[in-house]
Length: 434
Image (cartoon, rainbow, N blue to C red; front, side, top):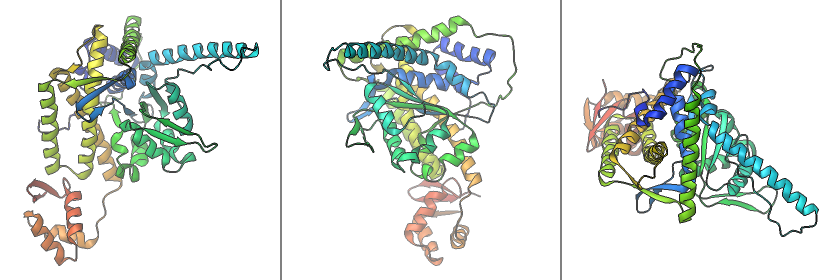
């Protein structure tokens, strides 16, 4: 593969009936395919939660945690696909909360009748939260350790809440959540420390392109937060034409059934082993994804900017997550337990998904570059102009010295200039872009 520029969502990676669900949602409800399909990936990520991990190799396990943004202009029909696809999860959440309310009422009645303090207070089995503080989020997660999803209609509200109570700390907390690393949050109101040994919190919401650029550029680009956000973008068909077609109830019932089936199977699997089940690539699948990663790393090292390289390295992580999600989707669709080995076909599909989301990430990088162009001191510009059409690092350092530029600064200019001013050939050799 020579390029990662294709922005068309690879719908065929889904089982055929899910493809029908997505296409029908577009035909009847005007839901853009990338929005519906991406929301479905997140629902299955949530279904898996902490019950399964992908063991890439010894010491490297991956949990399918997704941070997903549906990116589009105002009126692009972003919110409805999320709520529609998440109906089964909302239903389960409602059923769990209704059960909790009844258990809590019964618990209070028993306390009131003198049953004593030996009774265990019921816990709310909540899997969806919205506007919530970091402390409350961890508290909810302690009662729901297998899975949790933060659903924000407008993702900018999520980001703006980072500094509401604990400046800088919440952003670092979310970076840890993305990696599934243990969490510790000190309560402001007491000496209690809230901790989660193995967090699993998905994030989904909507955002406009310009707001995304404003919200995630600068420091949030520098610390990699931007690159952790999967971006689902409309394929360009922005017409929202009303029609008389209704969404078939049978397809809705199918989706509800397989989501519930996936959650049930994953939970039963966890209950049996009392720990997350380990899934792994087959030998040829492992070779394929390593080869893909290495080839693209080499390509971007020579032609990509430093921002593009960083974005791709996060997409590599997502390719691994997609493999486990797609494997679980296939299992739920056929209604039969599959082996814990992820095959080459599923791996190829995961790679195609990763390439789609890399292409959407590049759109935001291009937007950031256009809106905040890189500024160079005059001597840096003169240095770049003075470089010959082809040169190596040592030559660049000598020329840089003529303009009073240090070796470390020359190396930094060469690194940041890849894909903008230079193409890295090999072994420290560069070619200037005309």
